[in-house]
Structure formats: C-alpha cells, structure tokens
Length: 401
Ligand SMILES: NC(=O)c1ccc[n+]([C@@H]2O[C@H](COP(=O)([O-])OP(=O)(O)OC[C@H]3O[C@@H](n4cnc5c(N)ncnc54)[C@H](OP(=O)(O)O)[C@@H]3O)[C@@H](O)[C@H]2O)c1
Image (tube, rainbow, N blue to C red):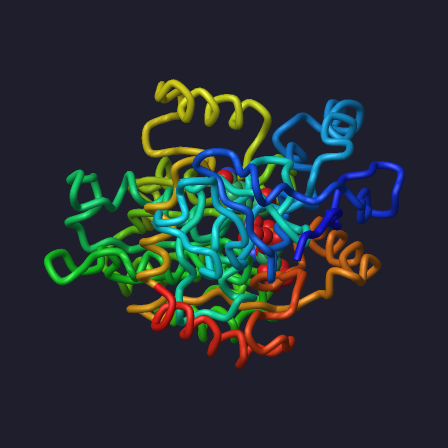
C-alpha cells in the first residue's frame, strides 16, 4: 500500500512541552538511498535527549534557551526504534535485509524514529533480538550502545584493555535509570568462555523506589539507597567487604546541573583523602553528562581522538554511525544472556498529551527504566500485545531469515 503522507513527532518550541505531531510527505519506496532502508516503525524509545531538544544539556543554559531550541525547530524527535523493513534500494533486494524483516536500531539525527515510517542507514540497524518484544527492542539501542561503547575501551579483551583481565569492583550510579539498568546487565555480559566477566563485585546507587527494579534487572552484590543511606559510610563498608577500592565507576547521574554533581566530587576526593581514611576509589571514572567544557573535551576526543581529560576520568559520548556491530553484540546479550530493558510505560502515538507528560517526567529525571511510544500494532497478529510481539519476533528469525 502506498502511503502518501506520514505522521512525525517534531520539535515545535511554541507547542506545549515543545513538541507536536506533524503530517509530512510519505517516504519514497521506489527510490531508496543507497545503503539505507525504509521501515514501518512499530515502537520507538523516548529518551532524555529527546526531552532536552537534542542539544539540551550540552550547551550552557543561557545559550540553550536562546539558540538551542530554535536550532532544532521542525526536526524529528527520537532516535531508537524497532520495526519492519518495507523498502530497500533497487538492486539490494538480495542483501542482508529483506522486505518483512524485523529490525531495530537508530535513525539519523533529527530524522525521527517517533514517526509511522522512518528511513535508516544500514550501518545503524541490525535484525531484532528474537528474545525481545518490539517494545523492548525499540528502547534498547540508545542505552545499550551507550553502555557498551563506554565500557569497551576499558574491558575489551581483544584490545587488551586496561581492566579486561582484572577482577574489578564496579560501581554504577543511577541504576534505576534508562542507561543505568541496562549498564548493570551489559557489564555482566562482557567476557566469554575464554575471558570470564571482568566484574568481581557490582555495587549500584539508586533511590528507594528503584530498589526492586535494580535487584531484578542487575542482581548486584550491593545496593546503596541514595535517599536513606549514608552513601560514603555504605561505600566504605563495601570497600572493606571487597577487600579493596572500586576500580571502575560508571556515573549516569552527573550532568551540567550542580545538584547532580555530588557523586563525582565525593568519590574522586576520596582518592586524595585516602591517607586519612578508607580509600574508596582507585581507577577509571566515566560519566555520561557534564558541563559545556566537558562536552567540548568529549567532542574533541570523539572527533580527533585527542584526550584532554584527566587521567582516569572521561565524559563518554555515544556514536550512532557504524554501530551495527554493537547492535549485533547487544542482540547476542539479549538472546544468550537474557539481557533486556525494562519498559516502564508504553504510550500510544496518538496520545500527544501523554507523550508531553512523559517529556516533563524525563526532564525531572523521575523515569524508571524506559519509555516507549507505540506507533503501530505488531505485524502478523495486528494486536497491541507483548505476547504477540514476542511470537512474531520468533517467527521472524526462525522462518524469515
Ligand atoms: N553521553 C552520552 O552519550 C549519553 C547517552 C545516553 C544518555 N545520556 C544522558 O545520561 C543521563 C541518564 O540518562 P537515563 O536514560 O539513564 O535517564 P535519567 O532520566 O537520567 O534517569 C532517571 C533515573 O535517575 C535516577 N536518579 C535521579 N537522580 C539520582 C541521584 N541523585 N542518584 C541516583 N539516581 C538518581 C532516578 O531514580 P529516582 O527516581 O529513584 O531518583 C531515575 O530512575 C541523561 O542526562 C541523558 O541525557 C548521555
């Protein structure tokens, strides 16, 4: 069926929550760009970066208010998605992806995954894990790639990275968030039969309402409740039990906001203070948020590979282009090691008011796990059901590929 128009969620700074649904011309199915595909989107992830206008917290606040929002006006919202291939370039019909295949991945910046159809570069997609529903698969790419790419330089045994052979005491800060709850699982999945997991002990900091979810998805050795526990005291107790300091910290909470900044100074200052008390930390501290100047340094490191961070510190920045290999690895973790994201809410695409509410929740950093926008019903069964999603995922891999 030819669709001449498509619905797309776009940035619109004068609309409530800065977003609206726009009707745009449909994507051509007969003239698909080389090395791209057109997909019918089944589900799409909704992430903090979407709520923060793509550039949001990378710019200083005053620049963000004046320029940031204007610069993305009319751009499509959303990066990650799961869906069905509906068109490939002429002459590529016998390539890796056939019409009807179920895929997951990310779209280009500003082109929108929260749309009823999307066009994606082949190097940003992969076949969908058959162990996940469309909803689960749609919200894995952004957070899964963040964790996997951030960990790789430290734990890649093939590159003999610094921490791959060590028994590491790992600390993850913000374990109930989208990135944090997947990062707990990804770090445990690293290693294989020839090189076992690099994690000796996993500790996670989260709030009281995220405790059960963190336990269920990450099964960490220690959980620290940042509201009710004395964090430093608890960390000191863990260091004593572990018989050594933390070696690797993945901090998903630090951002440009001063209120989010307490962990980094608390943990890194313990290194300087070690002669006076218990040494909490000796190793690598990776954040995924920071000040404008941290982002500048992260950009320089990413683009020209020049590292301006202090030894043992880094602000990591995700890369979408050429991430298919990483998506394949995440698929293997999902299928072989039962890794999966937690979908806390699924919002229908038609319900723009509900999407706007979720955007506000994301900005307030109160979302547990992941949010998903349901764009179309799952194929084959035409029902909005997780069970049918899963069955159709299995069919895809066992019958079609
Ligand atoms: N650099 C990159 O490439 C990259 C990639 C992906 C994401 N990010 C950024 O990383 C950040 C994290 O993203 P996310 O998807 O995980 O979502 P998020 O919205 O930041 O996570 C929300 C979670 O954070 C928890 N939280 C809030 N304050 C906390 C605190 N002080 N201590 C411990 N936990 C706290 C909340 O738990 P409670 O409700 O219990 O407080 C909630 O479960 C976002 O700012 C995002 O923009 C950066």
